[in-house]
Each structure stands twice: as structure tokens, then as C-alpha cells.
Length: 249
Image (tube, rainbow, N blue to C red; front, side, top):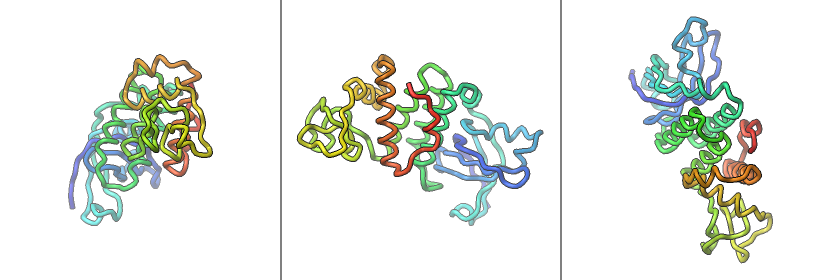
């Protein structure tokens, strides 16, 4: 038997029995963890309020030896709030839908339970903090998060140099299958020609150039979001359910 402790973000919850829940968290040291939280659906449970999606929590788990190697689920025995991001996210539709897509993306990019993914964890914490602060447009925060998640997963798109031959940009054509912008010589069937402004916007979001990103016009923001969504769907092989509800531009 073993106790272990970690801090993490609650990604989602599922009902279990009459009063329990299965909590899925992305943790700093243990990657994605699924655990049973007993009694948290009871009206008087203060414990349960800390284990809602978007919450940043310090959690203690109890596991038997077999559960540590992947059979069964550990118990969540204690949780302390680090930051209640959900308090500032769930009441505003744009923030809520963007945040939900971020949680789903983080779960999809951490397929294997128990494997640490500190970069994805830190990216999610930073993204939710920015979203909760309300200082930046939710759609831009989401697109920046999606692009950086793709980059950390090994799918970084190119928005300037040719993704196939490396020809310095700017380049006109964009191919999801090729990995971003491509030159005229490398153009493949199905390539599109985005506006230069949309490509500059996406490059700024990927590198964290917020002044440039926030100067973009709404039409270019919508165009860029469409490219990000298509690129993400291609590499995940199936779409995110939550993206259909996100406000565009």
C-alpha cells in the first residue's frame, strides 16, 4: 500500500455509484491520473467542490500495489485548492468553451496514464490562468494553447519557411499534411492559400508574440482558428467534441 501526493488540474469527472466520482487529473509528476473520490456528490461534501473541472489542486492519493502498476484506480483521499480557475471561467461562455477545449486537448495529448508530461502540465496551468484573468481574448488563448500542444507533441507547424524543403519564407501555400506553409515547387494537391495576415497571427501565437497577435483583425482571427482546428484534427485523427461550441472571432 502507498500514499502519494501531487498537484494537478482536474480535467473531467464521471459519476460512480450514488455518491462517488471518478476524477481525471493532469498532474505534475505522475502525468494523467484517474482516481476515485468517495462521497463527493453528497450535498454536504466540501471535498467535492474542490474537485471540479478547471480546479488546480494539491491532491493526496492512496493506492494498493496493484493499482500503482495500472490495475484498478487509486483513491483520492485529500484535496486542497491551489487556484480555483473554474470560478472565473464557467460563468462566461467564451472562456468556458475555450477552457473545455483546452482540458480535452490536454487529455488527448497525455494518452498514457502515469507517464509524466511536465511541459503539457505547465502549459495547461498557464493557459487556464490566462483565461481566468480575462486579459486576453479566449479564442486567442485557445489557439495559442493548441499550437503549443501540437509543437510539444512533435507536430509544430511552419508558418514561414517551407515545411518540405526549408525555403525561407514567406511562402504562400499551406498544407496540413505537409506540416504548414510550403513553397510553389513543393505545392501538393489540397493546398490552400491563407492570407499573409492569418499566417503572421498564427506564428505570433506559437511564439508568444501577444502584441502582434492582438493587433490582428477579427476576420484573420477566424481564418487562423480554422487552420488551427483543421491542423489539430488531422494530427489527432479525430476531432475534439468541445471545439464545435467555441466562439469564433
